[in-house]
Length: 210
View 1 (cartoon, rainbow, N blue to C red):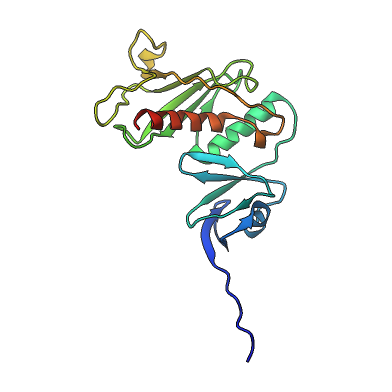
View 2: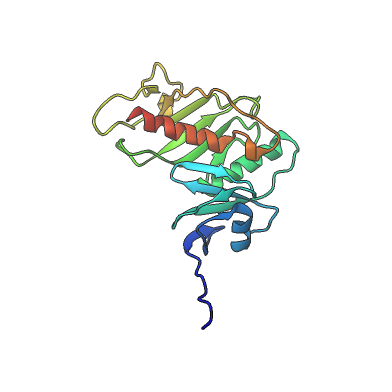
């Protein structure tokens, strides 16, 4: 009698917008091959509010329904090139966004996910940047002025009133988030960026209702 062939368990995930079946454990490089992603592009793992840029040598254990988007390679160059790649990363997650094309001083996300515990599922999000970005973190965050908690509890670091909010008349509330230990490297895959800033805003909101 012949030897019984071993079967390999697989999971169904999304890679580069396509449904793909992959082994339960594999490297990111193998995942790109399975998803027909060019090897010079990078993969971003999307899980809830978190987005992480992955390295080809990483060993991962994807679960059914996981989403992996691909982004173009980043080549060292001007801050303008880096900024455009960070905008591209945001667009992969949030779709259409707006930003300051001339001076790169702000980014606007119309549909920013709000964690459970609030009276809304989404909010608009405005991020102000300094002229020194990306070498210093975003300076200010602003959210929809009508956000509240479901239990009526006040939100720390959230200022919808006119006295503490320069954009009150535009419907914004100042969300005071101060990012510390901002990590900047030439390699954007190992650096903080606009996407990690949005994650920090989400996690801060999450912590405030827990």
